Amino acid sequence: MSPSSSRPSSLLLVPLLAVVCASVGTGCASATRMSPEDRASLDRALTGPDADQYLRVSAYLTPFFGDGSKRLLTPYPPEDVRLLDDTSGKPISPGAIQATVPAGARVRITKVEFPTAWVVTERLLYTPRSWPWVYLTVEGAPPGEQVVLVLPPNLDRPLDFRTELEKTLSPHSLKDQLDGFSAAVKEAVRTKKLVADMPADAVRMAWGPPETVRRTLEGTAKNEEWRYAGERRKAFLTDGRLVRAEEAGAAVLP
Image (cartoon, rainbow, N blue to C red; front, side):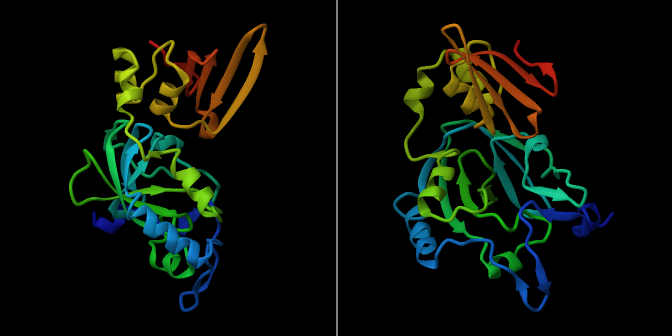
């Protein structure tokens, strides 16, 4: 089998945020509305004085869809990644997990790439090419690999961009926070697992930020139901502590 035959057909892949190309000659419409001045300022700051960061959550390294030159950094398992759909609207997996990088690992931002018309045209079709990409070097990743964190589209202001970035990266070391957890919780965070009675911060560090949170009161108890993309994974907390979790309908707590 040739290398190209193992790739999914580009005709079956469409970005979640549709980018319509009129023709090869005219290229694609820009998928960012942030001003050129704001983009340049963000890039200078994030690759300069703010370049050194720490992983706020434990994350996976996976293939980068059809681009063999890059790796995707994501807090979510491949089954829950929602960056590309096929023509029937089903999410496409980026590929199998290749490594796990624990929360607190050092990272360095090397480039911030916005989906301008030119950039979208240059990116491979079977990638999330209409989304902003943040290029990183990651502690523990094989040297020389291009690691990419993909941020959501429609981040029109620098503050919105930084807020989204800080869901995954932190400018400050997490050592004190991690050292405050029990040994069992620290190990669960490191391996992206859950254990009963984990504090909410540790659940977020292990599984990543939830897509939605449903809050209810039961007497004096404050309950939260965290739902992740596709609702395949759910975590249930009471008074800030994990009491139950599900993955594909099955209980996951030991």
